[in-house]
Length: 210
Image (cartoon, rainbow, N blue to C red):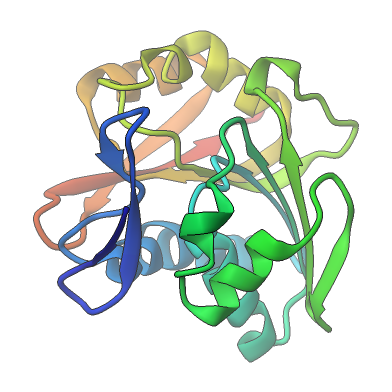
């Protein structure tokens, strides 16, 4: 189900998980603050090129905003997103054109979206995903712990750390104390930051040197 959020941008509702993909108080506002500003912009201060992994391609909004950022800033971003439950075409075709175009692309193959953004989406479960690449930025955008508790564990954050370079950045909208504790146990330095509308805090985590 498609829903227009408070800032005029659109999000989808997952019947399977009983949650919207992004905040109904502003889907694009949330993505820009949590993933672009806290994540992508911060990563560009550390790394010349961005190798980006997203847990939860979902609605495609974060990928679309990242492609726009890469084009506007002239920074090479290589995006890999995984998704276990792809959104049905009946819903993706109603999304804004740029986002719908990402959904229309083939799975498991690389695509050049613009001169600065390389895109690949993979249909797989996290436990089945492995990569020889190492990422310097992760968007951790699983559904909330109430719906997907298995994705917010120490073991999952250890896997995230294993996919990352030292000083790599991970951002997420969820700031639960249990999530912070699990991130620290997995070797991250955790920072709390002010959240978007109706969200008091969000998290940025940095992989610490061993």
